[in-house]
Length: 318
Image 1 (tube, rainbow, N blue to C red):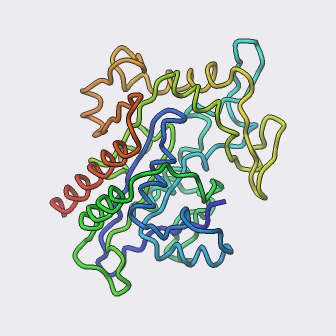
Image 2 (tube, rainbow, N blue to C red; image 1 turned 90 degrees about the vertical axis):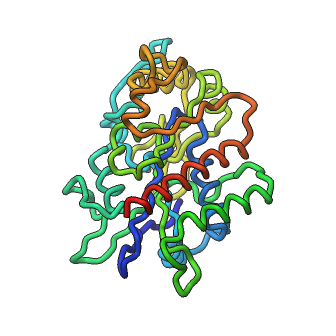
Image 3 (cartoon, helix red, strand yellow; image 1 turned 135 degrees about the vertical axis):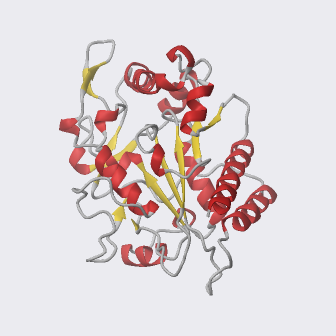
């Protein structure tokens, strides 16, 4: 389970955080890229260290410049999810639709990290309340994930570029960057929270149906809130459950949900065709095509370029 995340401090003329969005279909690399970027910017971050007690980690994270928010933490209870059927006629809950998420609460939490007013009143105390101090957002997603091997020279060059770009004016007395980074990742960020993300920092990772099916079927499952349960298999850490895809679920539900939800981004609604250049420009998105054979070094370099551009853009507009 991830430790508490607290909204970044914006006191003492500290600049507002850079809010990076990473979206795309299931198994397109969103979570891995988010953790890889955090390991570059803050190599001592929790995802790269052994688990600590909750109080130690919560205290530590308050001094970290990088926070990851997972849309998967904002699913509604399973009994409220829409129903669907796989081709064999079996009925299942659908985790891949907009209505499966508590989007008001998601927007409110992202808003609190972005330093703007919350978008909803009922957020169960997960956002900053000036009258009662900062309240944590607690993720149920794993802290430690297996990161891809990237050449150390590339990591160091990326780290140097980002530290320079994200430095507001000068480092504080602890030597950390003046500007925090908040990485928001999930399958349906756009258009639901596009307006909360920093300009030029709205990434979309493409993946083909074959890639999604192959990668997802190779996974053991996904962490979900305990109250949502699973398909009868509630294994997991305390406070979490574990979802495993039933037979046919990826092709019949996951991919179909992606096609329906994201058709607006593509020419003629074909999610395996070309993106609609006009829509991409209107939404301010940067699209990674995700061709086979591309290395993680390529994706990391592309993402770092986008972050540097976004940081430069925000400095110019300050």
